[in-house]
Image 1 (cartoon, rainbow, N blue to C red):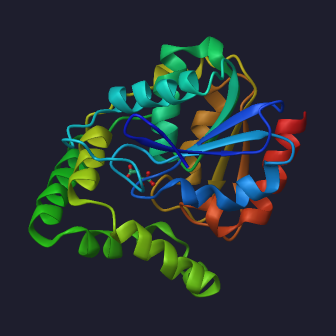
Image 2 (cartoon, rainbow, N blue to C red):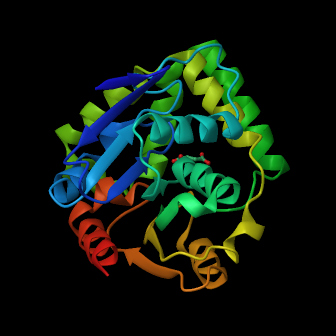
Length: 260
Ligand code: MLT
């Protein structure tokens, strides 16, 4: 692990290979990409990092916004001296990448969006995020993580993943209260990036778990139809965390997309 400011960064593979940076979802960490990194590090310079406030990255004062997350994203790439890269983001990671693309499109080579959406939170989502902030203040992270994560994962996968699922849950519970609340603030105050989709001029792969109840496939079909040349792959037997739930299927799609 390398520390870039407050951010914990992990590099895998040779810098001589094409770079790909992975941006995890909420309230996860860089660890969620382990199986994708295992499949790609020999052909790609894989960069993963913990978003500010999660995993090993410091939460600071918890006053996070999607803009500050995008600042961190480019700061990590600049510090590693990576000018051009492919990027892969899940859910909140996708929110971040769409705004990062809007800010600095020339740096992107290929884009992979997993289980995400371009719309901002509507009023009811904002109210529910506020209730979650209140709940985390009152009860801590565990209750929130334990109620949120099972809604993300396709139920049969909880048993199938067994110890791996339990270990990840344990890790996500250990995030700081300030970090979790900072992410909720950033998510609920993010801008809508739907207008960016038609401007995406690079090869784009969209992946969505067939059973994703948080960002359902129908929404990602709409996104894929707005991105010129956007390709959608529905991942069977997976919910909202498709790269973790069906890594073999996701990796095959990723490898063939990155090769093309
Ligand atoms: C995520 O996986 O990053 C979250 O589901 C994002 C969200 O709650 O909108």
